Image (cartoon, rainbow, N blue to C red; front, side):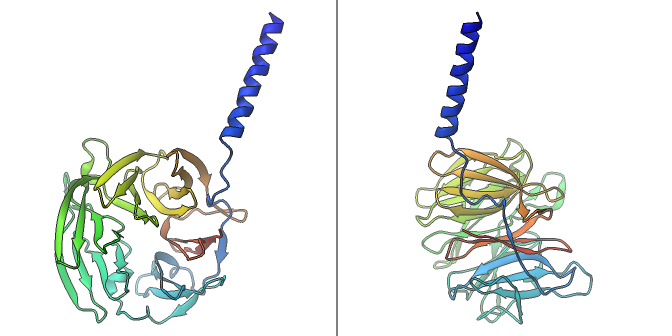
Length: 321
């Protein structure tokens, strides 16, 4: 009997070793060793809500004020720099006041001459380089029993033809074609628990080099969407918590951060080939935990991922490739 038990124990140890060989720990970016980028702003002026990569390689950002009566800040990070530089405005375009509102998304087109945003009640609008506003149409609906609770998504994405997408009423995707000025609701819906479609908003999205879109929803689901075929596939929910705060593509992996706004942000990886998740944990900058929610995420041309946190003591971090 002892011989049988010993043999079974050896067999189990062998199988466990094989699993380790077959499924090694990922060496991809998982936000466990972030580097701090120094900011010149005082507490209350450091809540980073937007990051943009310009054609010159510089990253520009917006920090919203958490102090009444204080204005937000515009800043720039040059490639390879470990410091933030305050600037007066974004190059080439007028910045409306709504740009400093953390409650609405805002994105530029590829030429950085048109700004798109959603209003607090879910209407899609655009601004040209001189600040002229154009109302495009209603996107968001309201949630049950919340007549003023519009389901405003947190982000947009573009397809290869320059069409703009976001999620709106009842979790459906909406597409706006600038070439024809046409706004339409697609017959494609974000994943959600049945009965929670009115809470299915788009939290984060990233477009791969071949045009495939990976996105995250309010309830914490990850999906993949092909704009050419119109097919959307639910890939599951990596974390128990709601919200997907950031997504970036790193090699064969989708690197993500999720978690409730009042809790610690937590990392995960999605293998784009096997579509299997690797669950991480809290994210760190050196030996310190990052406890604030992620307000913005951008990847530079070298593959480095920049993360901006929100709140009174928000900061800018970089995960170097």
